[in-house]
Length: 371
Image (cartoon, rainbow, N blue to C red; front, side):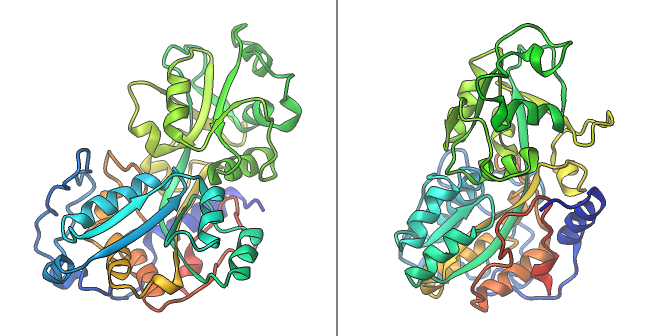
């Protein structure tokens, strides 16, 4: 369903700043605050805290005794957040092995609902069909929003003719009726040059594909099929970076990591000339429409009490990690400390199920998690 702009903005602001006096479990709350940044992650490329310094966990000795394996798969959009949390966590729990795959949201849910993984990364809420598949296998799950994201529409840096596209123009490019018909930039706007239009986008197993098609075309999964598709956003980055006439879309974090290779396009949602560029600020204040959304992890309830899983998820949601959500290397929008506390309470209470019973919603708000 589609909400009006005012409701979306209000909802995003409520989600980011709602007040909830809740305490985090596993000793990663304020009681452990040292004022020092967490130590540098062992693996190359670990994020640095540009959005604020994380807090050393107060239970470092207990984390050091943990062992075990945690298997995670799903969205390539959520991957940078989950992988960064895994790298930081391993600074304290060196004997816990965490593998993070990128099968796409849909592909990941197939594995998750078959019992093959412990945690599912998802760039949209679980669908009704996926929920039924999990129920058929007696897989219960705890749904946890972890950040806000803005979908980035990007072109090649050599593209000199486009800086902003309307929602209607994006639909003209991507709707099912465009297949084999809209193949030239001049067909999109008369002032554009006579150049072939090359499109790159997430594959059909991607939650980003589901969200973009619903937000732009009006129906999830309704899209032309003649474009270069991949569940791996790095493949899409390479495709657009290598073709002057290319256009693509994916999570904002992948643009942030590849700014030198790509050019960001603003979006005019209402067709009134107000072009908004996705950024931490415009996603956080609700002005980047209609391509802002929450992203999630789903934890299999049967593994949530395993010490290494419980500690990792609480670390992920704590002040020991969440200041890194808005770092350059991760590139998403934080929900805010008090909101993360509420989500952590949901996890530690073992509250199973989804608060999105109809699946993905364009302009989704998260204030429902604060009730």
